[in-house]
Length: 156
Image (cartoon, rainbow, N blue to C red):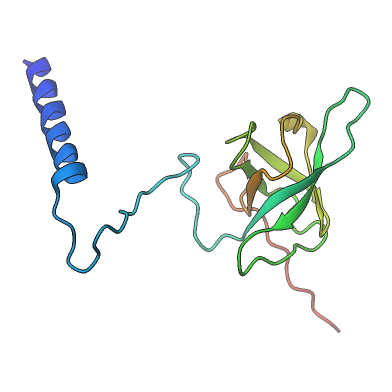
């Protein structure tokens, strides 16, 4: 009995999806505009108010004695991208969005205006290449809480 219900549900879902993809009427005035597709890199709901930095790899750091790479040079991406200040992103989550290391997640150990270093316990960055893109979010990888934001300096 349950198998019949599951089969009926799958069939109905397939028919609805096929009708939407191939035979659904287009909205007036939109012509052949592409539909919005929602996608994500994990199952964590990230608050849109969290700070983020998107960038592209422009060079790799020097490897250690065993050939492992833990740092890379960066170029900000996006019209409103701001170069981060030194150690502003310490503890933030770095996710690789393109290349051989796609979807790999690391924790930022330190950063300068032009270079990011990750914590070694997350493994090396070997496989990362120039032109790979990434995003760094003000979110600690091992916690459900956002990374601590530094309090603004007060002058006295």
